[in-house]
Image (cartoon, rainbow, N blue to C red):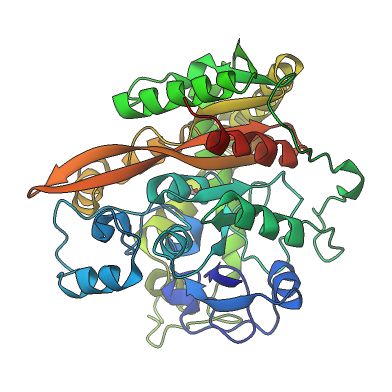
Length: 437
Ligand SMILES: NC(=O)C[C@H](N)C(=O)O
């Protein structure tokens, strides 16, 4: 199976740059455990995919293939379409793939490969899956080895899978679900496998978190969500309302914890041991080599997060920021636990709407200091904070026209299940294909 691998997952013969200047041309001396498992099973690694620098969703330069496909999945027409365009001056029919595994999602959506490895810290696999119309899976924390994944926020990071269909996504899941003694956070789930061939969803209760009806949820996503609920109901699932009151605080908690961990993890990139080293350090500064290397090597989003993270970890702000964020995280975990007493699995939107345009993202970033994109993670970060498995299923599309050209922007729904019960996501997802509304 041809597979693309995200640029932050180590591979021996291809560069692992995390799309960062600081790791430009860097090649790892070893394969990540997940890559090794795939190679041993005969997979063909077709290349490394583009990403937002170090996984920090700034919606980097990849374009969403939907912008060019024109309702056709033909790779030749994609090539023609892209070669006719000036990709440096995006028009209003050019969309972002989402981040940070945008390159992996785009590669699958464009039929360059059947599946791809990504990584998901707060939605980095699930958001691009939804925007590009492919499957996107984030496992229970600890199920896939992180050995060889460049760390961003270690308590949240997971390897994830993007797939063109459910079967290929599940094949990769089966191959890389493996305990790894090289990863101290790896969990042995081998005794917990519970996948079942079901003829319908009788006996399965689907929870609908009421707090996910957020302000700003687009009309098309609202419709997509209620169609999804109907589809599962038609397959004999029982639908119940559940409550996750701290959804409103999840984004602040996530961005505080993720930035704090990033500021610590990224301290290793200092120009001494890895990648780029500044050639012109200003010797009048206190730490000229470190500061110049890091100023030249990291992009603006990464620098912003390092500064935010350093701030929330300072002794004077620790309790009011990092301490509170951790408390909220614990409350979110507890709320999920309560939900799973009423429901087996939750169904939510993956995003608030279809993919934004490239130019829209640029305008918003300039106006609001670059935090507006963070709001798009509202439905994905809660499962990350709680370490739960979640699967995004492509379901529906938003129709839009530009210069008389009709485009269909994909929309995805998210299934979230209990810790360790990853396979239930796949079991339920099958019914999005089976039942006719
Ligand atoms: N890495 C992720 O999962 C994406 C998230 N938007 C972030 O920037 O942290």
